[in-house]
Image (cartoon, rainbow, N blue to C red; front, side, top):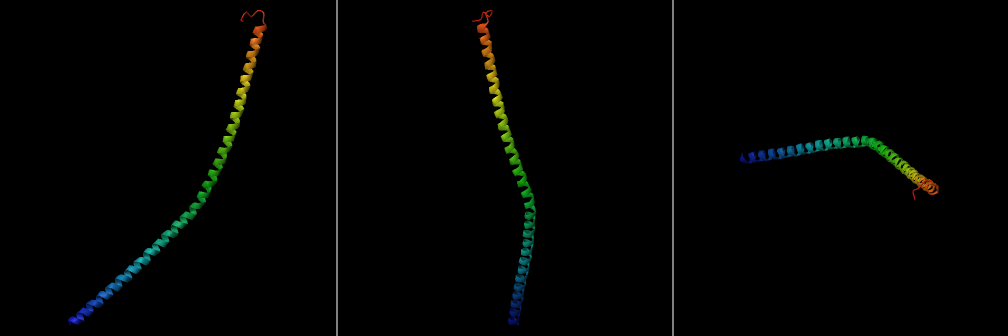
Length: 112
């Protein structure tokens, strides 16, 4: 009977090992299915996000164009201001020249 007991134990061990392998394979299959589902969900979310990224990129390009237009306008305004300052300085110089000339030719002005 001892030989029959050993065979029975060996059969039970083999059956338990086979059951363990089957359980491990089923768990691995289930884990892979969960990972596939999670990957599909991430891809779906990424695809949905591409629209908002494209919109944000369009808005950024518009903002850059607005900034460039503002820079050009500011440069033109600075150029006009510089021209106006130059005109003021020229007018002031002309005025000072006339005052000095008036003082020079005025017989009543004793400032020399």
